Amino acid sequence: MPVRLTLAAALLALAAPWAQAQDAHLARNLAATCANCHGTNGNVRGKDVKPLAGVAAEKILAQIADFKSGAQPATIMHQISKGYTDEQLKLIAAYFAAQKPAP
Image (tube, rainbow, N blue to C red; front, side):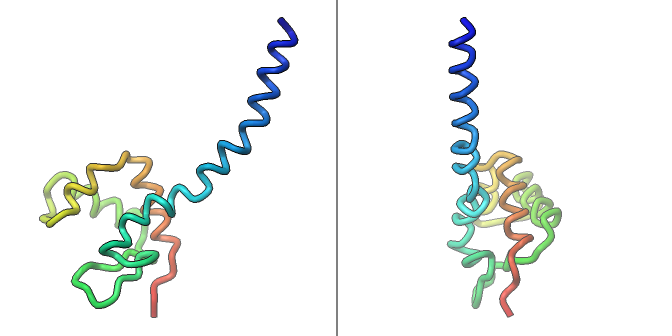
């Protein structure tokens, strides 16, 4: 029995860095969907859509909550906002908050 426990612990220890590496770019990957309208890294140009780069995460989350609840009218954001978990939305908002706005 101790051998099995040792093997299980070793497998978990070896798998932990691999599991973390899988999520290294999760926020960026989730935010990539937003690039269709909000531009690369949240820097949209020449559109009626607001840029997201450099906007405080709390503000982005508040706007998304308004889209989700229907408090803020939208063409597509009310649907998109419902497609993510709260944790995913926090990752996306933090990603855009960390981006530098285009000059």
